[in-house]
Image 1 (cartoon, helix red, strand yellow):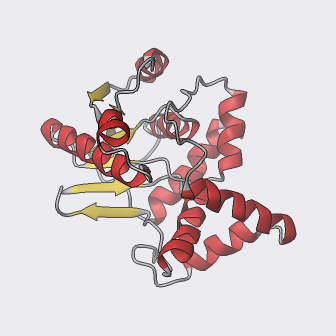
Image 2 (tube, helix red, strand yellow):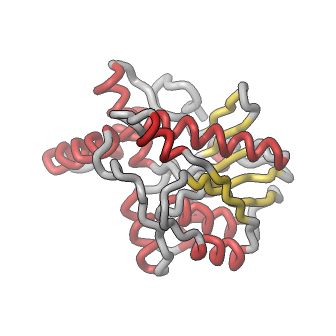
Length: 238
């Protein structure tokens, strides 16, 4: 998939759910993975023609794992004319060594987001974009069904009143496979996750389960996504 096609799907999501307002400053949450780097390129490219003017910054929360090199991300941000900030933390030590969490993802995500939101408030920025794509939407829905017994997933736009931060997800119409194809075609340097539980999470289980179901009933992800759009799940009505 070409960048132009990615920007087209990004713009549709942005327009459908009114994600960007005039003169917004939007922080792009950068993990270093393919999704966040593709989103950064898409939003940076959209600045040239989107009718509402907006500014971008990029932010990474350094979890404290050793031997993680952010130089390629810094260079990409320089090339895209996007200021880049790294928030230092000792989250990995707290989660894995101090707390010794058996299911570390929830605590890690909570601490990571808390660190980034606090930094954004210091910068006077109240909007952050995450690169959650269509597959993430469906996987989260499946996880909610399996582990919580309810129909739920994250919203395209979420206002966090306690932090006074608005979260937007401009990639909700993007398929993960298309993002992977774009990143490979453009030789975008992806930062490998240093997390020791990467690939062994509940999300990975949901991903594998959906793949298995899709082998028997091709197109199941699209049908579930359509069901989510037509549901009463908070934030999904256009």
